[in-house]
Length: 518
Image 1 (cartoon, one colour):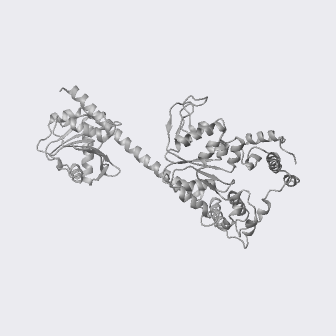
Image 2 (image 1 turned 90 degrees about the vertical axis):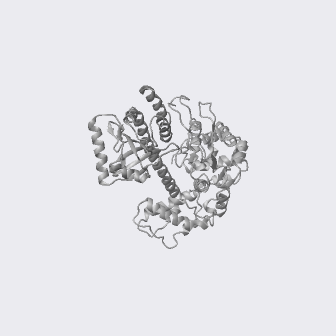
Image 3 (image 1 turned 180 degrees about the vertical axis):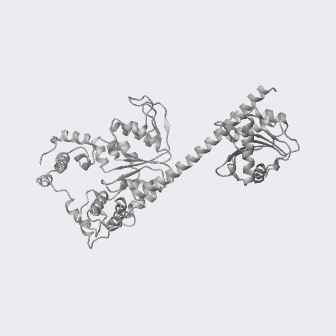
């Protein structure tokens, strides 16, 4: 075999494998046909650690990534630097032959002693990466038998400097990627813990007002069954969804939350199911949807009642087959996900009205959990107040947590709480802003309840038709918002409806558009 043939076959053995272990093992077995090599090591001297790092090692039977660090004495470090300097000054690409007693070199002796290697001869091929010699040798070929390496062996090995330099470079890059991946995983765990803390990892009232809810969570969390969370706006449906996910076997997977009412109807399929490049104007690249991102985890579909009918059909397919197709694509993507849905609407009534699919309702309604409003669980009020006082004090960066004034909680116990726990959090924050030095009072609660519009209550007591009741209710809310439909504190938000749906109902019932003047 001439040198060109040797180089081609050796390069195939070295670079024909993706991972460093297979590359070393394959090249070692090939080189054993030409020289008495018993062991091969990839080495890297790290000056900052004053140590030699063994990146990988191979014997005829196996190869491993060892990533073992050998601390070197000052004498050994001087030997490594001298070796590197001598090689660099010679301006040569040849390998170095340590034919007799390589252990007399201090750096070799200390390194091999840790590995339990007794070398009879040694070949060292320094590898250049980014025009810099890898200190301490780079590639080491060891023989542990009476057969020793020859100069011819050294010359052959020198031909393989570039292929092995590529292997070393890839191994180091892979090590950096592994470090970054570990850091990312650690950051991800930390962020999950922070999100759980901010959302309130502890469910306040689990032993009292929400005892029935927490019992249901403990029953359904270990399973993969769909869960439907029912309750008014602000009762904490997102917190219950979090509790189900983080109490389940999927807790190490992603938890993806989607507010179906906050996504424009024209974009909802792309957001949920993703799209292919060129699927529509502006689709400049492939995009994974929320369902794909939730693979191996849980997806929480909040405000599920706002999902348009065409998207309901696609959701039904996900529930039935755990499969999706991206917008503009034909590939069927299988998913391993759990679906938790939530709404403050009456889905049964929507099914009767034809605005929500009957088959989807049955699929979602496997295990419904009704979360009671705050006015039905006032037994939890003291614990909730204390929780929000502590939480909001930290968010507002107050120097200390204010104490409650005597009987401060009484106004909270008599209030109706249309905004539920979310409204309580706002009331506590408002009180903290007004009484930063304490003692804390909640007198501001008396101005919070919405005033009834004159004449509407008496009219509502005399109607029986469902459309008339809906008309009265919408008119009442419009009176409160002075005709504002869209946006924060608008009628659509208070009614828990999509603004376009509300306008359609107003047109149907003949309710006037436009804001009302004072």
